[in-house]
Length: 140
Image (tube, rainbow, N blue to C red):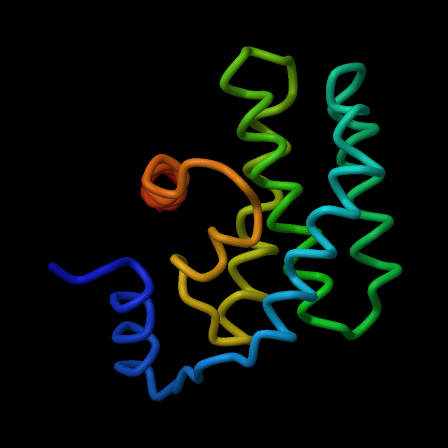
């Protein structure tokens, strides 16, 4: 059975886009940026989804052209919003929907597989990868 990361790489290859295995420092940057976003923004989700989105957006803009940082921040933006949506917080699902295309664009540009990206934020990767597939299918 093909893994999600393999499917992504094969899909990209069919479009003439090659992927590469990333050095650990890139994934370390993604992970550290996700942790920073969690520390700075996640508590806001419990008060106001718009404030959470604004906080994540500010961090993304502050990361400038550093794609690994932008990926970590936007991926956590999606993960945090999805976790909040699971418990029914108002606005969380919409926030997650806005972060999905942002992190996917950065992920593809860096050539990071779904499996590798998932390890940068603690949690159940089987569930998270299924949520990504479900959310992307719903957007089509």
